[in-house]
Image (tube, rainbow, N blue to C red; front, side, top):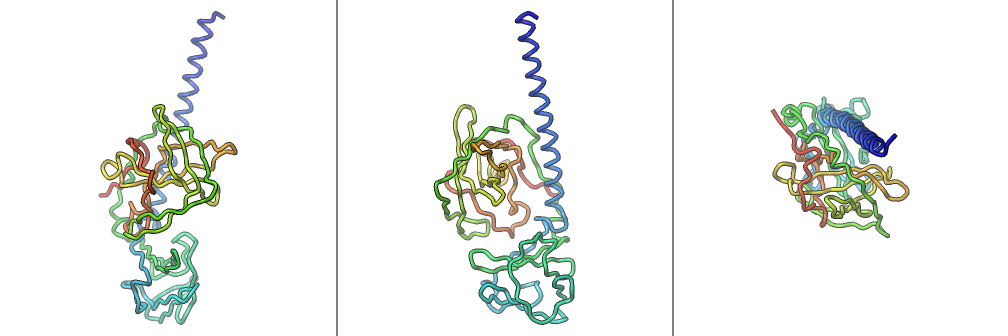
Length: 282
């Protein structure tokens, strides 16, 4: 075999391998996108949230449109109900008094129900709230699709996770207009067009990472900010930064979520023309 023939064959082999990898990435992304669509449009998915009611805004214990009397009592939320309230707790009709703690199960498995609606108890920074999930919500009925950019292998970039010596918390605005603490564990570095960029990230319990980011498309051709959830880094800190899987935050589907805005430094100076962009409605 001549050098020329060998060189051509090697080039063709690399091209074929790259093509196969790109096709596999596109297939995996398509499955991910379909699963995301099914998740957000499920009966008790993000589109079904119709209210987050803070007990501080209901000093008399009555929440508009929600049955029962609610009262914060230290580490518990006390619910009092009568037959007329039509509440179900743990699958059984509920009357009387019950001390509740925060729900950690998915909304579909919330302990408390009122008809088809699910009532989930939430606690944030010591404050109590009741969330209402309704399969017949206006947002769920109007939903058509998650508008997303088709897969582009050029947006799947090698990255490096650099944990901080100590975790830190920064105050950022949230979608409901309040400032709250956002925990950050390190920075995620990647290169694009020969230039290094970083995102401040949080490390989840399973080791995966989470970033809240904006870019040059935010508020125009995409939602005002998005999430990115890379998998757990390898032992050497390497991790794939796949912008094809940039996510719309829950508050893009229902205004009653309290999503955090990007922390300082997490607005990228270029357009991320990848991932989920907006919610399309009928």
